[in-house]
Image 1 (cartoon, rainbow, N blue to C red):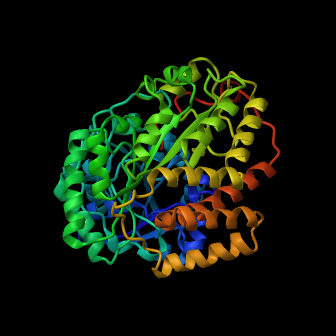
Image 2: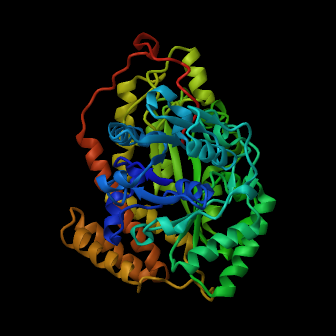
Length: 521
């Protein structure tokens, strides 16, 4: 059977990094790891192709070759996915949809032949057999969450590696916390399930054998959900890097209680972790308590961030505006916190009530849900009735983005971060990789776009001079952040150009069903 796996396009958002990737000549940040894993689970005698529409178009000849189309995506990719489905239906092709979107959008709305709900490892064999025999059911739903030992090596042969800036490895699924707005715990559960160390090393060996020498993102939603296992993996990663004398470095997502464990931070540094994304959410403690983000309370958020940075890891932060507890001073407090934190990449978004979450269920009962949302919390769309006046909330949100991504403010945070992570005198630093072809291209493009033709040329050159004089051992990191700053500045300008008033019609009045689905990332 000819199986065509298709990944829908992401819209242009802060998370897309579109304008930064263009400096490197890359088309997407990461490959579709889920579909690559599904491909490895399909029967060996099947013929398989993968089209990631973020890096290449879906051509008619691809559809002519295919006998069945397998799609996966997140809620934010919904419109692009539905357009692909309609294109396939017009050709009479069988379609299968899985991934997080299958849990957040009703099967009838997806308009596909077969929907797969849950993790693929326990479902694909039955689905493939039934497709071959022509007896496939409309819905396949996992009865339980499989252990990670059953997850195979992803099929790297299906992707064009040189079109991505980062490769991906998944080590664990699940998170032990219980944040009200989070859909991860609804999809993957609260018991962290991890791969064996040998599995992770096998994936890295596969990447290395394929010629990859750049960054690897450990895509776990909480890498330290099981701290004991995380420490074991870090020890093995450090040894693996020494064995192959490789410059592989890692990034991941974790919870803020990482700052409580110096041993774990030391092991992550030795393993080559250069950055970690943390859900900080808000500097307002009442908001953290109300959303059940208790792991961020009973601590100084600023001190926790600085502690993690002191171990050489860049902290990227997720922040949310729109909690019921937010008052009008939250916008100034948010900006003040971000400026003092030294977090250059501060992803500030409006609260989204995602289908299937505790938050969605509560707001539905309160009659405050407007729609199922679209998965992008970095626009100015609200899918629920906030306590704060909606117009004031959106205006405040825009003002926060405008202030934190102002060139001078952004470079100031980068310099604060560099001051905390620059190797101390006598301390060995990792080798910079700015002599590679890709990084040389990015550097030249940065000089031209930001230093010659940029709107904030003076701020850019002042920043580079400071880095060259005071932080030259961190020059590579500084240039990477300068390039990423360009993306955020372009996206902020585009957001501020849109002058739309929030449309706030309760979903109940519009006939929207509270049973809209489960979850999405």
